[in-house]
Image: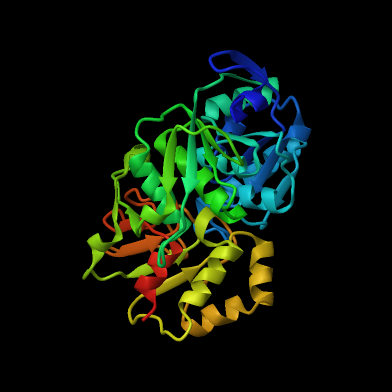
Length: 369
């Protein structure tokens, strides 16, 4: 039986109604549902987390904070702030069990599949319906199972693997993806699961064993980039190419942040790669720990001190995948390499800036000399 069938309690093609463990609302996605959901049937199964753009970089952000805070109070929903990226914080605090179903407003909540849980990103209208009824109805999708083999080459990271998969997966839109990956770390599983849904997949899981439909060979992956695209709606169609397409071009800024780059494992990797080197002149390096606890651990390990001494800019723990204004944005015609998940025009500042998703390894190769 496929993992999606186990969690939904039905076979592929069947219609099923399920009760989610949590419906997650944040200021980055889904806050509009506060106007769409007239009431919340199960407040104990909802969470409101203020996790984007902390501290607020625009007056509008402060207004959103007040709106979702008042909504949480009115509906008696638990409210949290300054914890870091909501999904990462929930995993860190062991709030999600492998049998849980989590509903959010972003497809990248498939990250919960890294521990076997079901994370789904719905539209605002669908989320509002789930809040009002307490249930979610869907058709159990088909599953594509991918066996992960081989070892990563030097200078290649798990984000490169995820980008390679986006390019090589073919048409898996609407399907669940299973990665047979017993040898991957928790961080590597998280990256694969959260990025796999950028193919248009329904969700993704990391599993220990099973029969596979395709193979993903780590040893065949090189440094990759996700290319800029026109707008948010075209993000899942953004192209992927080899990192060397930027050879000889000036990189103005690099960022380790978002759901992929601010983890303790990613920060340790970056710190090791800058040993004995200097920050390239004219490059701005931004570091954004993924959660407040990760920030504290990075301080304890001396990583933050190393980054500051290296010349990096340290940002508050928050989701910095998209920052239209505020800390870390790029200017006109500038090029940014980021571990963040979005590359559309205006995602990180000016519309005419070029944003590329890259691995920690590729970013540090560009930043350290």
